[in-house]
Image (cartoon, rainbow, N blue to C red; front, side, top):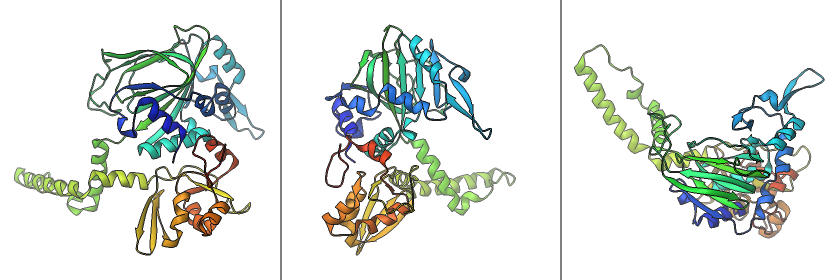
Amino acid sequence: MEHYLVQTIEKALGWDGPRGLGVEFARGTMADPRLCSRLLTPQRLLDVIMRRSLAPPQFRCFENGVELHPDAYLVREVTRRGQSLPMANMDRIGQLLKSGCTVVLDALDTFDPTMEIACRALQWWSREVVQVNTYLTTNDAAGFSLHWDDHDVVVVQLAGEKSWEVRGPSRAAPMYRDAEPNSRPGEDILWSGTMRAGDVMHIPRGYWHQATRADRGEGYSLHLTFGFVKRTGVDWLAWVADRSREREPFRHDLDRWNGPAAMTGQHRRLGEDVSRLVADYPIADYLALREQERPPPRHVATRGVFGEPAAVVCVAGFPPRVEKRGETVEVYAAGKKITFTGRAEPALTPLLSGHPVDLAELTTATGIDAAIVAGPLLKEGVCAELTEALSSGYTGLIQTGPCSNTP
């Protein structure tokens, strides 16, 4: 999937692909900052907040650096049938924004099609799970104190200004669940300065950082933080350990009662079995299966009730794997394997590209009935019908072509 945000991040940070993720701190500026307002504006963010039932920890407000009680910015809307839903008190939020506060909305990609597609494009690019959190800060509101994240982040400043300080790590490769706490900040300041609209920054896992507008006075800041949850050796080893259930020696009870010699013998035999197990389940297999088995995201599936779809798009969490096997083509994605005749390949390529595809145009271009090829992909959740809202998330953010939607 060729997405302008991915290309912009690469150019701003001087990267050629995702290899720089998690390696070292990097900072740069977009060549065309007009992309910022296309991604998100403060008004669009507040509109999303207004139209959803939200609650902490996904939706939070901070004043003077302190998290407010939900009653300070939420109300309970009671439906006619007595159902109570938490909803944002938009008048109260407006007052907080006027006086100075920080509004945080995590996982905006679950609500906004533009952010959903941006995260999917970054997932296809990085081969890691991506989530975007949103931060709107007004006037001289303080931000979070010095802290570190257990994942790599790419920060995109969309509007306004914010002061940042970034320090190096104080513990190598810290984890959320770790052998010891990581509570003492690093002392070396890597960068201290102002992020302005169009600026991009990469902060690796474990690097300490803080952001604030306490020194800014009037104005505001809006930025996105894309989090990349990379896999570690601990994750791979846990996966391998789960595979041990397939082998009988690991399912037997540990020998507690037959003396030290019996226990030592069992330990030796299991150790040998562990070596064989590790060899049989390499890291490459773990990473490949993780991508192929990830279930598809939520999407509209009308099953033709309102007419056959005119356009579709691949919504798999990661790029589908396509393998030719003699006279057939096998597609692996969303936890499924779908087999097609080899004649379908010219239509499969655009259908699995991650770009919206007009089925009639694809049929004309390839001479293949694209609706028939798309049918199994829609049924298994690899592709989704291109709704009006979903289409809006692509417009102006992907390469255009005969099978893509256009700005």
